[in-house]
Length: 334
Image (cartoon, rainbow, N blue to C red; front, side):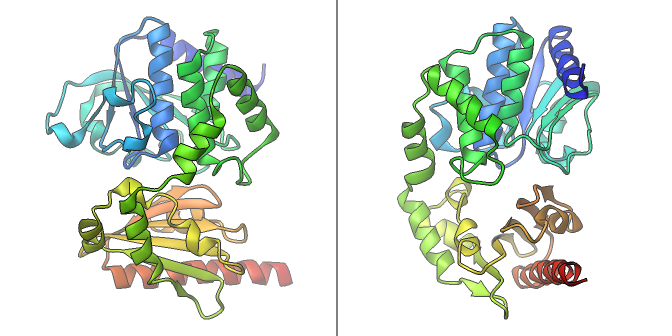
């Protein structure tokens, strides 16, 4: 038995030997986080387990077609909620990413940690971690298969959604033969791939277009044109009516400029708080850059939160990225 099979068996045992679960994913959830949450809920339901779903929230409205997505409780209610002893965390690169969900964990809680981020340090009692998986949803496909539960269209749609969004429509370098094979099986089960691609990757809300327009007007390049960035202010969000989910994908615009190695989106949350999203063409490990600022993620896609002014954050992060590029160049010329 391989080490991965041992992990899968331990995760299945964690679920089958317990009941009354709280399922959580990372703050400001994306397609993989919500898809993974509802896929776990689906599996728990099939195994006759009771559960609750929670995220600091809010849940992107475009994902409400997923079964049970509307059952995820968010912080918007202002109700603390009861505590749980058994917790399943999905798609959280580190423990802090569960946000205020940890206020719902009982003392002595037991946690199953399911994730695909290489920066995950294994914070669970049981850890199901595979950094070469394209998405946490891909791991859940294997977990469901290992648990011996046949997929239906609801679970298949959730898993496909997570893989579709985290691979950029099966375009990113994490799109492995295995991912495409799983996607093929899910389509065989009835998943409408073209419809999901149109809904999740092509369509834009008016608010998303308006905030993108503002961000692009600020597009800035480093002197060598290999780093590009843009930023969004609280006023932009208020005046355009945009929500956090409307910012998804904007970071790809600076990254997609020919010759740019790293694209960055800075979202100012307050006078001294900025969320930073980074995308790399491959020469810079943006997960390492993000970890320097207390964040994490993947080699080519990562993020962090910096407690500084917008100007200070832009200077610090672009300087760190520039140094990482210089180090890469030096290693190539050595």
